[in-house]
Image (cartoon, rainbow, N blue to C red; front, side, top):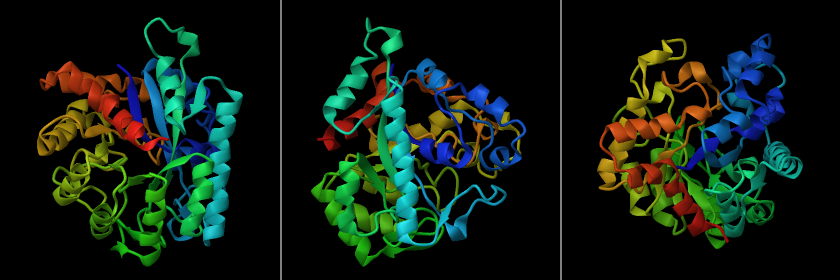
Length: 360
């Protein structure tokens, strides 16, 4: 069973903390043992090439993620770049895009996924009978917060470089849309950005949009729609999660919702520093089941782990130490009575359906 992860902040961590994702996660932890800034900001590393391979993680949505100056991570130190202008955001995201390009150029285990033929080549490397040493991790580029796109028409240049998924906002909002912590609608520039995105069939990611902006964007957008890393608000309160109305809107577009295996988004009141084993993968499966029950099928739930996205293994459910442990989520779904075909869809197939619809 192949796994697709809809959200990982790989390049941001390479640029900001010097993480080397060609090595094992435990090697990164050892290297960062004395780096208080990285440990405070990011926690215990969960990602690495050996773990992706061991977990059958064939495709990852790798983010381009720039932080506005007013949201700079507390305690992370001066090595965290933050932007005050769209041009600064663009430069930071372009540096991260170069990270993905170098990763694919320098290591045959990684491949950029920009076209359907590249996706199918990655999947073929995992087929039964293919040499294990030839297996690849496909990288789909996702922009989390669209401020690096200086003008909507600049999207074409980003698309040419491989950008295939765009989330217009993040937390406190962008020039394009209100965020989940700020509220607010789509802006006029946001409406123009959606028009250009649709011209290129770019995937719209509604994670981190305010509820108002999310519903407006989905109502206006005819292209593919996802929530790359969001959980149901009905299970854990807060604007970071999706309301039932937002989930229904995603479902109405045959969209997919990536669920996060993060304790604070699975158990009401859990906070960083609480016991890791207070939450288990059964709660991940329960969040997935909530979406499946709303949809009436298993075609719209998926994984969007956000692993290494400002938290580490200490904040993930008891059974999850690294990305290699993701198959345990499938086991939890099986324990709930899900059929093998539905588990395969949730663990990877649903994301592949979106990609096959979106990629040229």
